[in-house]
Structure formats: structure tokens, C-alpha cells
Image 1 (tube, one colour):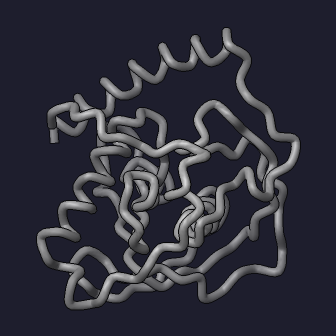
Image 2 (spheres, one colour; image 1 turned 90 degrees about the vertical axis):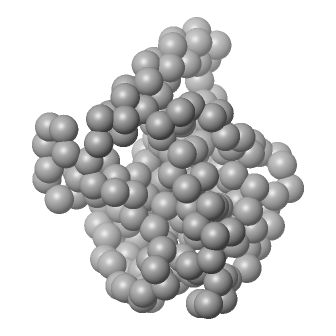
Amino acid sequence: MKKSEIHIYQTPDPILSTICTPIPLEKITIRETQNILKEMSQALIESGDGVAIAAPQVGYLVRIFVVAGNVIDTINNYHGEHTSPDKIFINPEIIKTSKSKKLMRGEGCLSVRFVYGITERSTRVTVKACNEYGQEFIMEGTGLLAQIFQHEIDHLNGVLFIDHAHDIRRMLPAEQSDYERQLKQMKNDRIQKINKM
């Protein structure tokens, strides 16, 4: 897989505060939509550390988010070289949330780089969505996956985590410089791993 450096939009770009529109069922399998999915997966790989991404982050105002395959591996307790395919969520909606909530420390975002904060998230979330073939499915998430579901659906509603987080902290210049060096290695590692598949 070649490195393409897909642009990930950064706050305060207005695209990140725009509510996204659903994709009609008959348009899920067309080339245009499939190309968006490929671009989103490519952006996740190139981010180095991204666990999920929403369509507006790469410039498309449609209701799609993608969870990185390595997150799915972690949830399924896979170890070593195995990498699950990225999980596609088209027209996702939260259909159930737990009453219990938890303060999530260190939440960040690929569109708010090097900034972290504390958010309050439901500990269990159930999402209904369509996959890349237009087939409907329901998936429940706890822990990190529940957090991802809420974070990404917020994106599709024009909401960033910094809109409701507290104790927001930006990395110091030295921390950011060190992390950027680590990111380069993470990007290369992800690209190499995908190329071996």
C-alpha cells in the first residue's frame, strides 16, 4: 500500500461542525461510496495512532465511520500478526446506551491533534448500522469501543470531543516533537503490516 498523505481536516475547519447526511441504501455499493471507504481506511493507516475515523474528517459530509482493524483484534483478544479488516459503519445510530457512565481520561482526536481532555461517556453502547455491502447489523461495545462509537457519532453530528470535555490539555512543544517522531514510526509500521497481508 502506497503512502498517500490523505488530508485529515483540523479544527476549527467548519466541515467538522457540520451535520452529516445519510447515504441512501442503493448508493452504499456504488464506486463513489466505496472510494470514500478506501480513503478513510487509508487515512487511518497513515495516521499512525488512529483507532477510528469519521467521514467529515477526510472531507465527506456523509454518515460513515470506520474502526481500525487492530481495535477489532484487541476486542477479540487476537495477538501477534493478525489484523482484522477495518469495521465499516454506514448510517450508524445509537439504539441503546447504559445508564452507567465513566470519565474517560486522555480522549483525543485525529482532527484536534496533540490535545487531550476528560469526557463523560456511557460504558456500554449498542449501534445499528450498515456495512460496506448495505447489510444492516447491530453491534454492542463496551470500554474503548463504546467510547469510539460515541466519539465518532458525535463527529457525524458536528460535535468534537473538545466541545464537551474538561481539563483540556495541549501537549507541550517538547512532548509534541517527541510524539511526532513516534508517529512516523507508527505510520511506517502500519503500512508495512498492511503490505504483508
